[in-house]
Picture 1 (tube, rainbow, N blue to C red):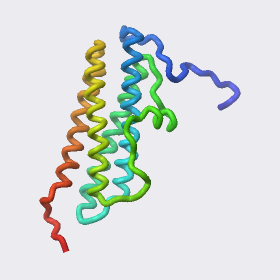
Picture 2: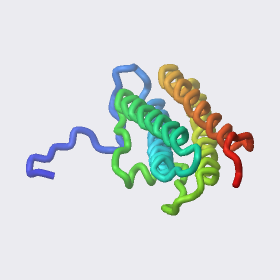
Picture 3: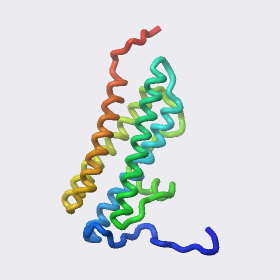
Picture 4: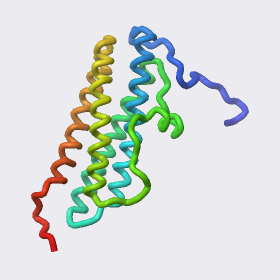
Length: 178
């Protein structure tokens, strides 16, 4: 950083917010949202990896689906980060902070067949979906209905993506085995 460095707000702090949400309630919600943000970026990178590496007869359709999925995850992450800021917090932004806050773990660097990749994605989606449900309840119980609604809308997209992946894994296909 340059000689004129000036920190406007330190990470892991919560300032007053214009929403009139008590600071202790805001802190709890911000912590939950920063977990969602971290998990989103783990999912984003794993989906992107699978997008790059998919092969086979259904390559194009799956390639396009995965692109849509990771773009939706990235958009959701942006909404979550902006909500953290609105609530008076600092959204996690460094790879270290995101890694430390994530409650899901990505698969390793190896390239897997698309069935294994989707199974790994479905597992991660399931964990994130469960976390979202808990965080919706938390936000609602603390009187932050707007955060609850934002997460609820994102939950619908997460569930739609995992539903499509589950369909890709079904045995019915037009592709003949050789």
